[in-house]
Amino acid sequence: MTETEEIRKGLAGVVVDYTAVSKVNPESNSLLYRGYPVQELAAQKSFEEVALLLWNGELPTEAELQEFVTFERSNRALDENVKAAIDLLPKNCHPMDVGRTAVSVMGANHPKAEDSSPEAELEKAKHLFAKFPAVVAYDQRRRRDQDVVEPREDLDYSQNFLWMTFGEEAAPEVVDAFRVSMVLYAEHSFNASTFTARVITSTLSDLHSAVTGAIGALKGPLHGGANEAVMHTFHEIGIRKEESREEAAARAKAWMEDALAQKKKVMGFGHRVYKNGDSRVPTMKAALDKMIEYYGRSEMLGLYDGLEQAMGEAKNIKPNLDYPAGPTYHLMGFDTEMFTPIFIAARITGWTAHIREQRAANALIRPLSAYNGPEERHLS
Ligand code: SDX
Image (spheres, rainbow, N blue to C red):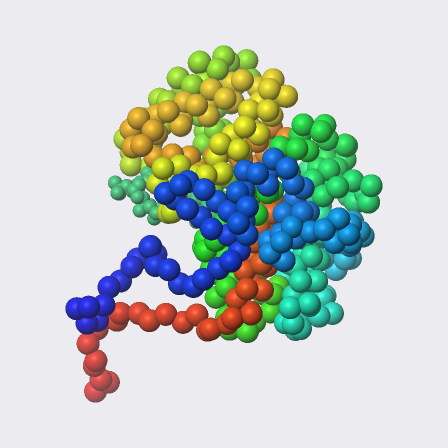
């Protein structure tokens, strides 16, 4: 390494390419999808509309939306060999392994698997968008020894996701909180999993390989796996339904003080890019508040506030999106391990938008390394 070369561990602060998909601005604490503030989209748009915005760069016309909705509703069912592949996996493996395997099989099934034209890539993206919720629902139900619930074409994306998972129609409040989470999770520039997808795409590999690799990156608790890890923290502290908000907050604060004294990293807090709080948290927290009210679970708010307050006082580190998302999915009835697969369903939109962008102006992603191993030596 020459003296002028600088290693940026974790590529921190390194700008590696342009993107027109989204803009994360830590100074103004804002996130724009194709120019639109994510909060406005979460308040006013369906997840289906947001997906089209991310892929096409513009919100759909009524006709474009209807065409996509028809496609999405008629492509939700899983192929038999995807179900068979899932059934071959142990019920106690991590559901992210199931998601990763299912996408890989879907790639092998797709007639245009090796076609990387923009049209074929878009069709494959829409296909994954339509089918992935059934993977999550199928896996959640098989872990509970419940029968499969087939998709319903009269329900929208979020309604149908919850229907296939729980076998009953969710209340409008619950559907809306779920939709908000999907919109917020959809896209976030060059995060680790999206970058993984772009690296794989840059070798001219296929879209399903890129998404499969992205799922591997998302699984880790420093990235998407944090929403699940947040819930493990809540369980470790102990969720006591009968407890008051204040009592729960006091126990959570004590837990956090102890964890920080032991120099533990507490999942759901901190962010590589945002240092003054994640732009998506207030919107997701509002959705969580509605769920807490809907299910009458104020003790959950106590745990939430207690941890946040203690972390703020001790280290001034703010929650990220995974912090309010975890308890929201818990209240809806998902098993903790299913939270990150839900994140996959949302982020398929962002990943595939980036895959198409990478494809359109590709350069092989192949950085350099500075060697720090043994000096040259020879076999005698
Ligand atoms: C996501 O990038 C994206 O866009 C990702 C994402 C998306 O939408 O795709 O937003 C989704 O992945 C959110 C992040 C989910 N991960 C977690 O919640 C895991 C817990 N958080 C961290 O480990 C951490 O904050 C990271 C990984 C998110 C960011 O880490 P950095 O930028 O590498 O920072 P760092 O680990 O070097 O921390 C800097 C300092 C350290 O203290 P010092 O050693 O300088 O004293 O802050 C401390 C850290 O110890 N710190 C924490 C902490 N996060 C940072 N201390 C305790 N708990 C934490 N959570």
